[in-house]
Image 1 (spheres, rainbow, N blue to C red):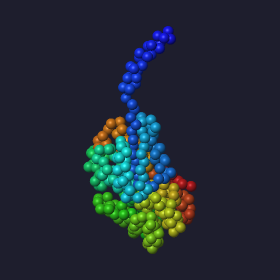
Image 2 (image 1 turned 60 degrees about the vertical axis):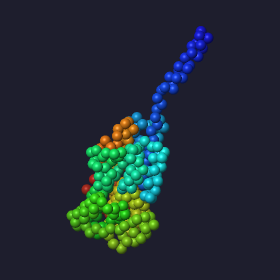
Image 3 (image 1 turned 30 degrees about the vertical axis):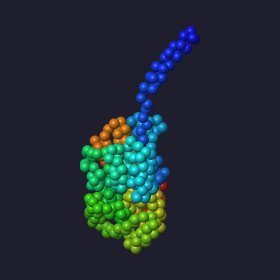
Image 4 (image 1 turned 90 degrees about the horizontal axis):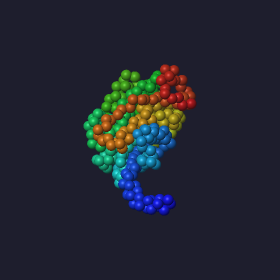
Length: 334
């Protein structure tokens, strides 16, 4: 019996070897990330939502998907080289994240016209020329649109609600918002209209780089505003703690986005729910890894928004916030 088993096993071994070799090996997909935000612990909550969305579609890190992360740390000039590197290592999808991610998307599109690109939050993708329309973007690109500029009037309204006596408001803006095109033009029009409705006189201070921080803050002091509106761009996200400390020291109620700005000490933030957007991005990436063409997937738009109020900052500023505003908040930081 033992001999018979041995002989049989030897006879079948070549067949078993050929059968095993014929089995399709499970492909490990590589997902590249291109970001202009500094690496932050806060990104963990966004990553978790993205990962869960992928897992629900059958993609598990360490099993059939891996990740290549490239971060420009707020230095926009690094984006083209980082995008080219993702193409070089052979990723299957490139995810571009971060508010005002236009330079990242441009860098990715310049680097490849074949690898799918998923925009994880981008202001006015049609106006910026990235896609033909939201329903059928075409080419190798899809993603999540966001309303960074469109929400600025609402942030001004919330600021006015928090500080009804605010007549002079200074906006801290970045060069990114001064680029030509429909987005910049519309933002100025929207803000002028909102300011007129709210009885607010708006002025602007430009901050181009961390090196210009002190000069920009001095210019804000020179404006003698009653409140401060900080635009949602990567540079200001990077400097959020410094901006929050300045605003508290100058007793300036301040509004911005996203949520992490309020966590850093800004009085309040208002914007789309970034965790929800991350889940949406994960769903799109999963569809692409399962064979869908990026250009056939409609650009999605955020449908969940959040108000976050830092009550510690309100106390430091000596503000008693209206109850109506407190009730609207999705989160109160204490």
